[in-house]
Length: 179
Image (tube, rainbow, N blue to C red; front, side):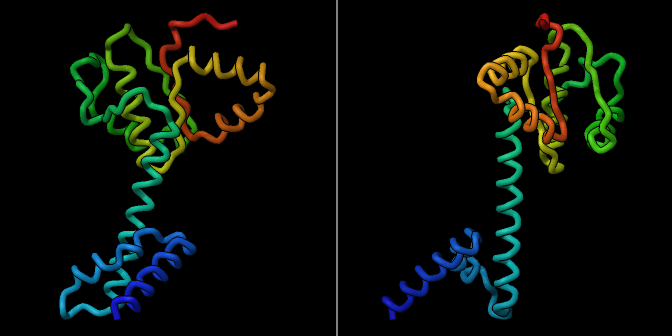
């Protein structure tokens, strides 16, 4: 029976891979957590919930990785005392990501060290959590990427990537002269 159980386990792993349901390979953990009163349908439901949460977590990680944030910053970590003329309710309004849905721009102007980058990254992280595609670049980096793409005849590919983004964050605009 051990050999039979091992073959079943391997078959479940194979089918989970084919069906692209990786958390289903952890079915034994779900069985251990079953209460005597629970049925197979409840175990299946738990496996499906785990798969759904796993996919959502992986998608968020992928969106954050693709955005290329220089550091991880959240809006909760933001020191509101840096902003003299901005109320926390306005930051919360921005955090709703309505400006993205309405295709509005935000321009942050101020001297270095006043929290603009932290706010931009925090908003970008929030946008990723809401399912938006985000690109974060400094002006110098995007300028270099555009020039290199043009030189390598890949400009249209880069333009398509930028166009597909729901939110493009350009940081340090004032540090660079443009040709």
